[in-house]
Each structure stands twice: as C-alpha cells, then as structure tokens.
Amino acid sequence: MDKSREQFEYEAGKALCLPTSIIELARKGDGYDHAFDSMNIMQPLNGWWVWWKKSRAAVEIELPNGVTTREALDAGYTCDYAAGMDDGIEACEDAILAAGLKVKGE
Image 1 (cartoon, helix red, strand yellow):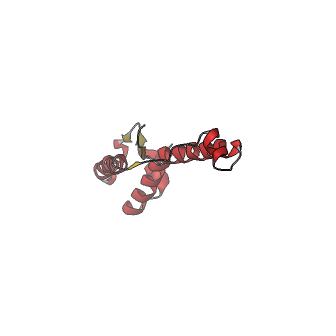
Image 2: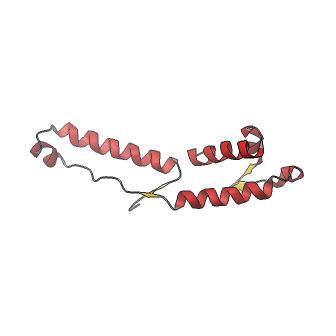
C-alpha cells in the first residue's frame, strides 16, 4: 500500500474517532466497502478519499537533472559523483511517487 493511502487512513481514523484498523478493514479496491454503512462512515470516507487523491494529484514536483560523468569531472569531482547524484534523484522520485505525488515530466 502506498504511503498516501496510509496517511489518509490514519487521518480519517482520527476524524471518525476510529482505529486505523477499522478503516483498513473497510478498504475495497480504490474505495471503501459498504460493510460499515451501519456506522454511517462510508459516504464521508469515500468522499474524503476522492478529495485526498485529487489534492495529491494537483501537486507536481520538479526534480533536478542528473549530472554526466564529464560534467562531474569538469567540476572537479570523480565519476562516482555523477552516479551518486543520479541514485539520489532516483531515490527522491521513488519517495515522491510513494507519497502519491507527481514528478514533473513523468
């Protein structure tokens, strides 16, 4: 499960005064099951989930360009600098996507 949904379920549980485990039990696909309708939480929960996703979709982060080995050497660094920078950018991209946000140009 991605971090965005974990964060949503934590916040929804707080707002509904329910343990996160109850929210997790209601999860069904990209929404929430109506098994808990007797608790009158499904309509707000599904609505909140839609708005949560829309708020995340509106955020787009631009990452820096990588550095070529030649650029690193010309700047006085070793070629490992370029590889390390590329690895760092890739790790940042993975974390951004896991949080439910977009990377510009993807």
